[in-house]
Length: 259
Image (cartoon, rainbow, N blue to C red):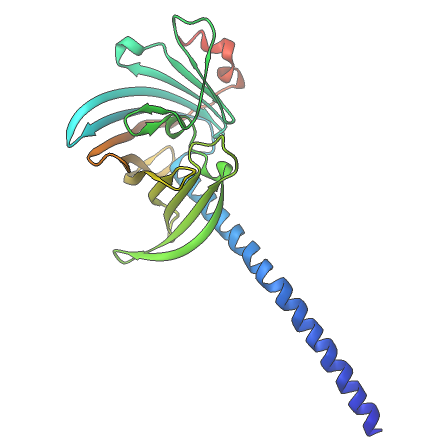
């Protein structure tokens, strides 16, 4: 009888050990998956803060400076639908009026009034000052990057999630981004953009939060060059409004009507 009881305890102990081993094998991977899901959700919420998920129209201006002195100023009208289709029209300077960029997914073209065929562009190509084409035409972090939570930081009494964003492929605007998001409301705070060689290209600060297009959003982004000290650009959004935009607006043939 005592021998039978001892045998039962040995079997239970062996299965308990196997169960713990299985939990040990599954636990870290499960924790990693949960961490990735949480980081992705933070990124999605922050994307919704920055721009509407619905179709919208807005005006944007870019003012560039070097050592505090103005060097260039440009204005644009932007039509966007679902963060995957965007039209960017130059409104100033007058000499470039009629130039239109069209983004569909991660494909980007520019239409010039005196050129019959559109010209293919890279999202990473510099548009003006510290602003790349992708900064203006595409700002879909959650669609372009895999997110990982690196740490939590305290800044002026507020808690921020620091995410590491890794490009899903080489066609996106930047290959790596460090992104600070306020934990209490998913407001973007700061971003550092890196090249494939891990070189800091620029730093962005999200400022001047105002209620536009139905919720509080940042209306100014200050972009500081990571390579040339004293060079920065201010990208400002204004007159953002929800607008029903049919799919034909994002068709190459339709753009000829807008030039």
